[in-house]
Image: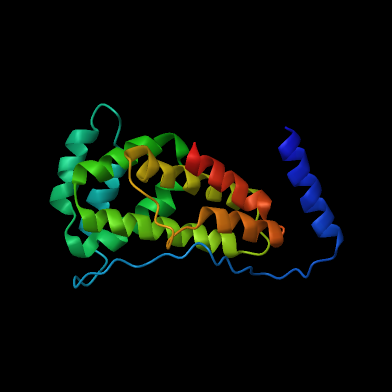
Length: 193
């Protein structure tokens, strides 16, 4: 509580200094690196999209192993980019209660390229939201949810977060200097939780 009060007071003092506000803030220490692959990414046909989304909509703790097998049959390596973006934008950032389930699905699919695309989509979405100058409370909640999701994908599964993708310490310092702690601190807390 004392540290939290100090952080809030510091942020309020920075705001009083009339720092220039802009509609976009550049976050330097969150740098997504696109997966290296020779496989051209594409959007699947509407039929395959519907089948994949049907499986995602009906997945639960009881049936996730069967649904993962069905997903494995539907997802070809050239659809991984689409699947990762869909999973992050429609599920991971809005449904924190299912993070563990979705991360288990990713690990059951056992494809390193898919894992790289999911990480890339997560970093990219978090960066887009953090770069927004005027961020709403719902968008701050999305950033926090993405931190939890990233934690489930990496730290909870004993996988590292590479410093070249996300430099946590530097990100916190940068957010302090830019009066953006209210966005970054919840992200980092959920990441480490």
